[in-house]
Image (tube, rainbow, N blue to C red; front, side, top):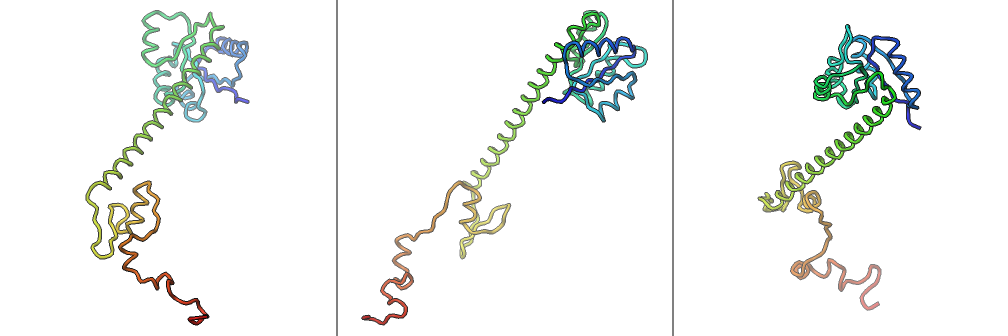
Length: 219
């Protein structure tokens, strides 16, 4: 079950705030709404009780909507911000969207409020999903670049000890060639003897031609 949405309302007229709450309930939206009137209270809510949606009147004496929008974009840039206000002129409407508002709903058409909130939440979720995909893509690109760097290391100059044949890389220092290859490649190493080494090693090393322990020759 989804948690109720946290909706922060910026409104200094109690009757209008109640009308907004009624519209939310009538629209069947599961939510907890909190109303603030001052910039200090608004900022406190953003910092300590982050909302899922912000609804703001456009202009009132103590705290105008554009100031609220700027603060919201600074502190909670991904939270939908919807103006709920009286009639807006074309110029003000354009300025609202240019400033980062998600949508606007007129107070005499509050039946449009819940659909506007639902639409804004869908857009916000799509934006978050797209941002996550971009983050994962950037991580993959970085991993590929690191892998390419390792491949280039294998194809470049590789310091190797003349006596013990250990090799050196800039991260792990001196190490056996076997360990180095396991760290820097996808190869699975197995242990075998080449023909030349097989000829140089005495058969006695492998127990060939030697009697079993406890048994004398001819037994």
